[in-house]
Length: 224
Ligand SMILES: *Cc1c(COP(=O)(O)O)cnc(C)c1O
Image 1 (cartoon, rainbow, N blue to C red):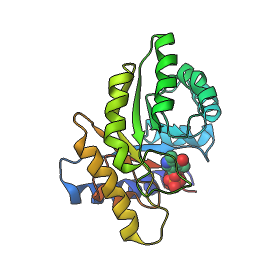
Image 2: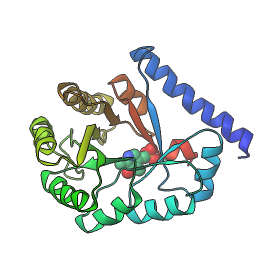
Image 3: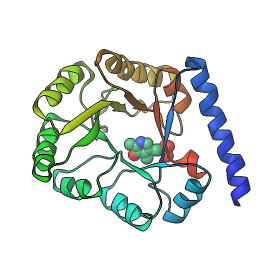
Image 4: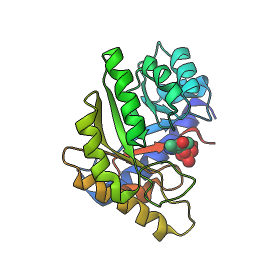
């Protein structure tokens, strides 16, 4: 695809996001984070050139490599993957704009210690395992509000901005919808939360209809 063809292709993705968000309300804004984990720095640059600014990775080493290679561009980097404790310092050295996958009090406490030592703060989302799947990270939905408040209280260098979830792994649309509704309900109960990150290439329209205001699009943004 040349640049013009890619632009036309992305216009169509944007149109799909627009249609879904307008079904919620004309005031409902949805931010797209382009997940570049299957894409090269060259492909990221092509998408940047047609207007995309926010990108995300799910491995600390890949985030570091791509952010370094593209450091001359004014990109906004998100980290959406599971964070191992021994990778915390590496992540903080990149200073991402948002960490989507804070998934336990224990990780929050480790992160807090490292943030304090570096005199930094980090914007984070609490990941919720809304469909209670063994294969997924995240806190159980019934514990989410109390864990969120505990982290707010005990970890002053972590700025919790809201929640993140991956839709249920199911071909049944009603099951996926239910998982998004559970996450959005938790989001609404959290005073001051502003980000509800849910929806990926296969389910972003449904996620938006359920109230998502940040979608993480990998394959569909890079036409893979
Ligand atoms: C890979 C990934 C995405 C994007 O997945 P696609 O299906 O390619 O859109 C979104 N969120 C997380 C956490 C991911 O790891």
